[in-house]
Image 1 (tube, rainbow, N blue to C red):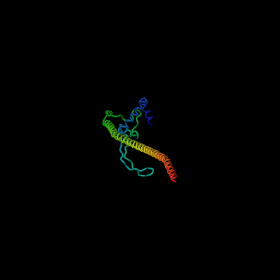
Image 2: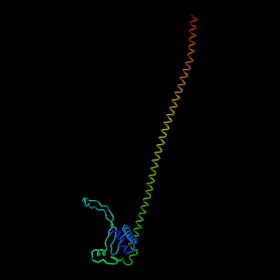
Image 3: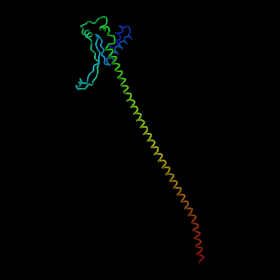
Image 4: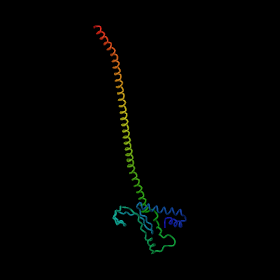
Length: 223
C-alpha cells in the first residue's frame, strides 16, 4: 500500500478524499517533525517512533570487503507495539470492524510530558537557528566589507597607474616639443648668422677691390 492507497482507505472511513489526504499529511508531518526534534512519538498499540544516535564506527563494504569508517549519524527507528506484534503474529485476531489499534486512554490526548517536550524541542531548535543566523550575519557583513575594500584598493591602484602613465606621456610630449622648438630656434639663429656673415663679406669685397685698384694706379703713376 502506497500513500495514495492509504488516503483512499482513510477516505472510506472519513467520507471525503480531501479530508483524508489532509489528515494523512498532517499526521505524517507532525510525526516527522517531532522525531527530528528529538522527541519520541508513541502510539498505544501501534508502536513508537524515535531518533537514535549512532556513534562513529568501522564497517565493511559488502562488495569489496574493505574496512570503511562510518561517521557519527542519527537515524529514525520504529519499534512496533505489543498489540501490533500480536496481530501480525496471529496470536490475536484482527477485528472485522472498528479500529485494530486500541484507542488512547482518557486523558492521554491532553498535552503531557511528551507534548511539552516536543514543544520545548521545537523552541530550542528555533532558538538555535536564530542564533546561527545571528552569528552568520556579522561574518557576512565582514566578508562584504573586505570584498568592498579589496575592490576599492584595486580601483585606486588602477587609477594611480593610469595617472602615472598619463603624466609620463605628457612629460615625454612636452620634452619632445621643447626639443623641437630649441632645435628650430638654433637652426633659425644659425641661418641668420650665416646670412649676416655673407652680407658682410659681400660688402667687404668691393672695398677690397677698390683699394687694390688704387694701389695699382699709384704704382703705375710712380713708374
